[in-house]
Image 1 (cartoon, rainbow, N blue to C red):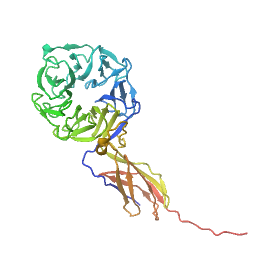
Image 2 (tube, one colour; image 1 turned 135 degrees about the vertical axis):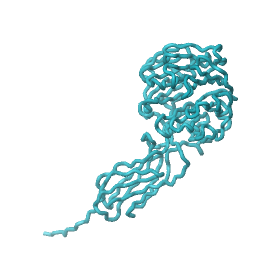
Image 3 (spheres, one colour; image 1 turned 60 degrees about the vertical axis):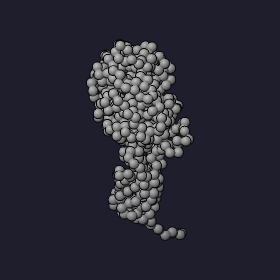
Image 4 (tube, rainbow, N blue to C red; image 1 turned 180 degrees about the vertical axis):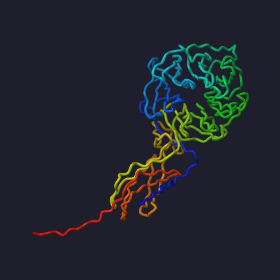
Length: 445
């Protein structure tokens, strides 16, 4: 007999909903994570830059972390200055905010060497189109340029057009060869020759903390500011327009990242506690749940609906959307009148349960409406034969229900098909066995 169970979730939501999971194993307690990057060639490999304890790396999508500081002088304060070379992804760069310089690893973070001593690092970026080209931003001394992947460096002076040396952010255009942008205080500069010369492009209303160029329309540039939200330019930074629909008033936007899979989607990390998502290249925004003081952000390059957010007070999080459901294996033989437990889990595209976030520090005024919960909902469970009728309560991504067949069922192989939010999964085959009871008379001697 084939029994089909349909699991219907009644939790309604507009797509996409992001569910957050705390990434704590191996990281310092309540780590101050102010930089995070994902290896484009091996997306399961991540690096997190902390403010005070240097660099950590993960090889399993952030599930566990190891220190990556061999060769680095600690304490090391990483704020934004962390990058993987997109054309040579075994090369990683990490800089110290307080003058400890810029370090480079040639072996995916195993070992590090100081390549730019004494620099007060605020930004570093490697060109996605020009092999060997790297730009480093000093928060006092402007930009340093390398043509050999960071082996040697040349300072770029004001005579090259970079007239403000207080650099906070650097971004390369993803598809325009040797085009780069620099934010220094509230001014934007652009270079079309790989950083040899620079031209003033415009200014925002407050200091710049983030820049991102659209992978779909390379002339479109987004800027995140200290107290005026997001600005958008459609002409490579020449003119700018505020674009804050859905963002809190006076938003401090610390980080920006376009989605390489859906290039009209862009994410903004904010100090108000949330990551915001735009589906229209930055015109309108929607919050994805309260996490803490979000300072850094990265988007998974190949897994749809997976992002990472680093906070200054609550550590690092992975945010992801519902992708599929799983059911725990059911014992091969089940019996009428004997209960067994059905366990259902909703998961993201990487296979992680949508469990929700654990916040060490919270803002009670915001939590009521923006807490980053896991997947919660009440579901109904029915079978095609009309034998089973039950409800399953999913809490933080998992639902368990005791199931009993209370009527005889033919001794055939059974499978269960579970459905929720338009997704389905088929369980392993199992039998439902009916034992007729045999009564024997007592014999007295």
